[in-house]
Amino acid sequence: MKAQTRGGAAIETGVNLVVGFGLSWAINCWCLPLFGMQPSLGALWGLGGIFTAASIMRQFCLRRLFEWLRIRKAPPEFLYIAQELAAERNRQIISEGYDLAHDDQYHRGELQRAAAWYALAGARWTNATLPPCDLGLFASNTYGWPWDRSFWRPTTARRDLVKAGALIIAAIGRIDRAARQVRK
Image (cartoon, rainbow, N blue to C red; front, side, top):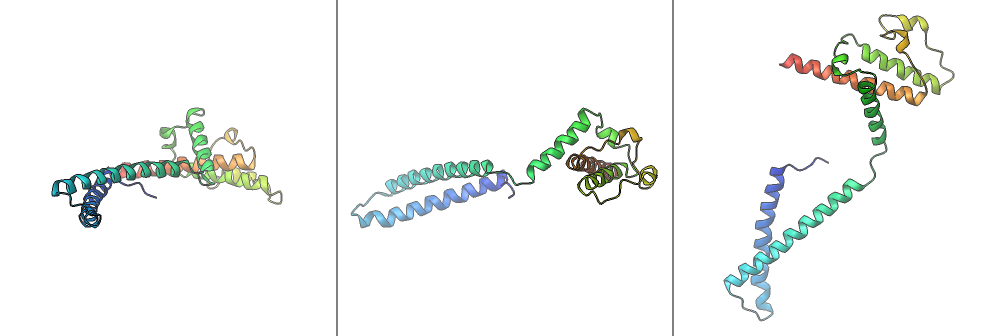
C-alpha cells in the first residue's frame, strides 16, 4: 500500500473538517429541538466546533493506532531473505572492498556471469545428479567465471544463492548508474 502524501493528507483533513462540522451542526439543529432544547445560533456553532474537534482527535488517534498495528504485523515471509541479500551486498562492499566504483568497471556482464556461477553452484549442492561445474566452461571467456579462480569460493547451496543474489543487486546497480550517466 502506497503511503499518503502530505498534500493528500491535508486535503483529506480539510474535507473531513468541513464535512464533520457541517454534519455536527445539522444534527444539532435537528435533534436538540426534539429534546425540547432551543439553543441559539452561537450555541449551535459552539457545539458543532466541540464535536468536530472531538471527532478529529478520535480520527487522529485511531489512525495512529492502526498505522502502528500495520507496522507491527509480521513481515512477509520473503522479507528476511531480502534483508540477508542486502547484508551480503553490504559485506561485499565493506569487507571485500567491492564498492560501486569497483562495480562500475565491469561492462561485459562480469557481475551477471559471477552471479550465474554462484546460482549454478547452489543448484549443484542441492541436486547430486547434476554434473560438476565444467572446468573448460569455467575458463571460457564467454560463459566462464569472470575473474581469477582464487575468487571462486562456493560453500553451501543457500550461501551460494545469497552470494548470487548480492551479485545481481550489484549488477542492477551498475546498469542503473550507467543509464543515469547516459541521460546527463
